[in-house]
Image 1 (tube, one colour):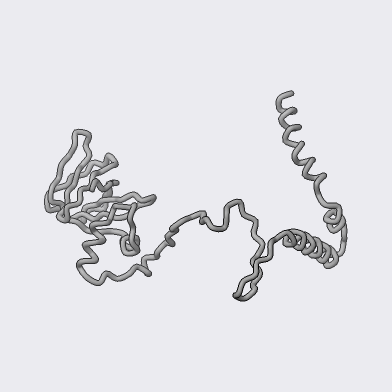
Image 2 (cartoon, rainbow, N blue to C red):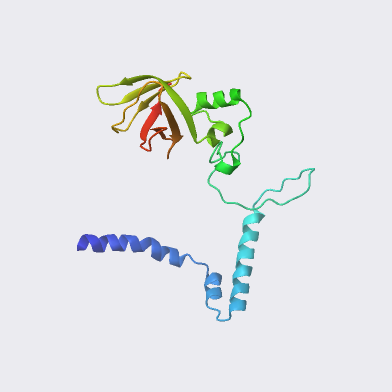
Amino acid sequence: MVKSLFTGLILLIPAISSLAAVDPSLQACSQINEDDKRLQCFDTYIAAQNSVVTVNKPVIHSNTEDVPEPFVLSSTPPETELIAGAVPPVAKSQAPKLANDNQQKEIEQGFGLEHKKSEAELATDEISYTITKVKKSVHGKWTLSFANGQRWVTISPERMKFKKDQQVIISRGVFNSFLLKPKDSNRTVKVKRLN
């Protein structure tokens, strides 16, 4: 009981000290009953606060148009970006059309290598492959080699069988995962690319 009372008192100390730090002119604005006058009081208070903050700002003269910069509070320097190289999502309807076979082969070669993405690879949601070599490990995981030289291994322990010359589809899953399914089946298994 004493411990919870002590914790409660410690939590109340910052709240009480923050109430004492409220500007008296701001408290006077909050006590006005008429809406328009109260709003006008708050607006003049904010305008006065903004003029106090911008007085300390250095004046920089340039040859271009004198456009005032907006006052922004930030904990990071303006030269650094918080997210570098952010890629906006691409909808399926906005996906670029593949012009030729060379571009298709480039997309197939890069599919599954997430550290280097192009817009065409981001827009490609699934690719069809033909299995050329199948190997099953002792732990029941399949290593599949395809006609284009790629090797993929199953991650999840699904009971599926794969054969040479079988057509499969690898599609993008959630959080950069990939799902493999045979063309003649709806069952999927999680896979990752080896090379």
